[in-house]
Image (tube, helix red, strand yellow):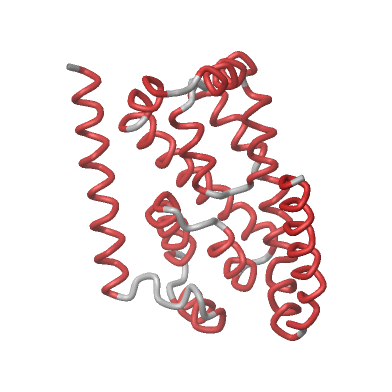
Length: 214
């Protein structure tokens, strides 16, 4: 009964978040996230409410599958690096917590009943490892929502999730805030520089496929 009530509450909460996000999008609350100049002007015009709106937007939108980088790069254009890092960390942690709690309440029981033996052993190692497996996963995956979903349906406890996520997202977060805007601007000004990278990826895929066929 308690589990059913928890899932029902999570579904209602998630539906509420979706409704708020859709209404806010329709009203233009999040307009300008893809336009750096518009974003800067709008956020700065809100004064002290700008940072609050930024964090709330991350909490509402990121759990739905939007990577944190789409928020952190604009943040680096509006605020100083320390402020942008702090706000991005708060936004990412809140979004990760919401995504984790939703998937744990709604999807964990279904996944656990169908998990294959090999993945069950991996799940048990994550649970036994405490903070470290979560920290390593977050360092490797950064602020992508699927990592929150995966940990939500796993057996990891809430405290290790929070500690591992809180520490593990810091390196990627700092790099994105410090250099993300410059990197995007460089790619925009030098699109041909991506061709060698694309060629290497295609060649690697072709070699892998050939090796599998052999």
